[in-house]
Length: 258
Image (tube, rainbow, N blue to C red; front, side, top):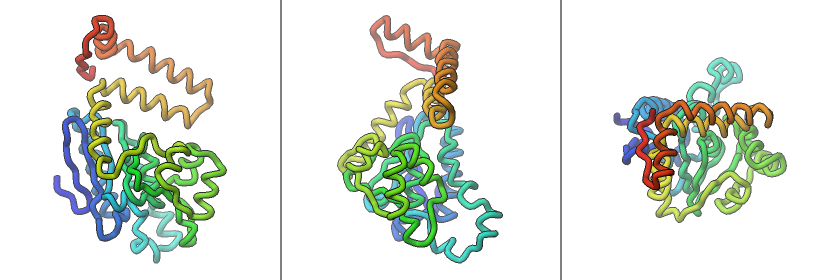
């Protein structure tokens, strides 16, 4: 499908979604979010896609919400529309693994969208920040919550209360970023990583993703119990049988996503 605010490409088993509002530094307008939701729905329904990558331009992953659209809105309008919950959170609800490939600015809502992904791979030019305090508001798409669970209270307070940006190296040290590549190589390197995930058993990958996410939502004891039940459940799949047989036979497994 053709979209007004994003570009969608299929590269092997990977769905690549590129934010495409260059004049607005990929600000997250209502139109862009609607396109993103539609694209994610389509990619999730496509059994040939095993992993999704979100990216922007070299200058900006996304520079936040489109302030021109919301500056004049009232509390009742924002509350009644449940702004952000309807649309933005689709990223966090993806069952398939989703990776943010971040170059340039990932600020405000852009940082929050990246944090909704399963992990972030950054260019050496990446800048992360929650600068909402500078315009008289606070994060509203999970910045104060997902950041705190990722990097702890002190650094989250620092970012949210001062509005300062952090670079890729500091973000990696803090645990926001999994890996860093040169900006020119970022998308190709992330596609390679995503393809490696897509080549695995899709149901097993989904179980692994669900198990890790559970760690942020429950106690250690409950999380371990949940993980163990999913581990047991993998033994009901053909792919577990094939994977272990291939290991014993010293060959590459041929997964059927069953």
